Image (cartoon, rainbow, N blue to C red; front, side):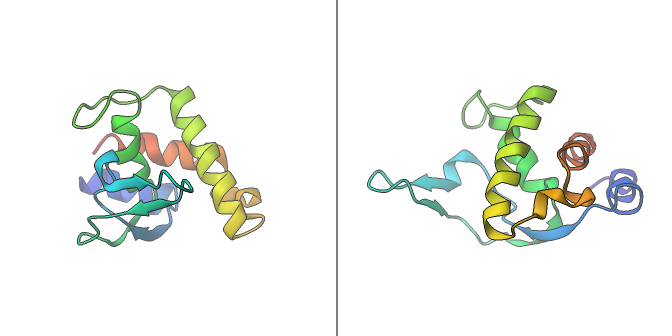
Amino acid sequence: MNSNISNILQNKLKTKRVCCHNDFRSQNILVSKKDSRILLCDVEFTSYGYRPNDLCTLLMEWGVGPLKYRIPDDETINHVVRIYLEEYDKIDPGHSKRPENSLKQISNEIKINFLK
């Protein structure tokens, strides 16, 4: 990662380091036809990294298909972050209410991460 971008994520935005898949492309997300359960595969690159890493990878393919990339608009980024926060709140109630986990904070982290 570009050291300037890393510095912004770590020191200015105080971005969380979390467990990242690091290959979070549509081909590695399987959905069961039977019960819509989600299975992540191809996990050999999993390690700790900045929170927006996997969201950026997913967003790069959003609406364009596998192996085709584009940087999404704010509306798309915010839509994905809202889904992320809704699901995270099911695991950790109140997660999205903390300032460091706000829609604006995570959206900004994603936009900065796209600069790398």
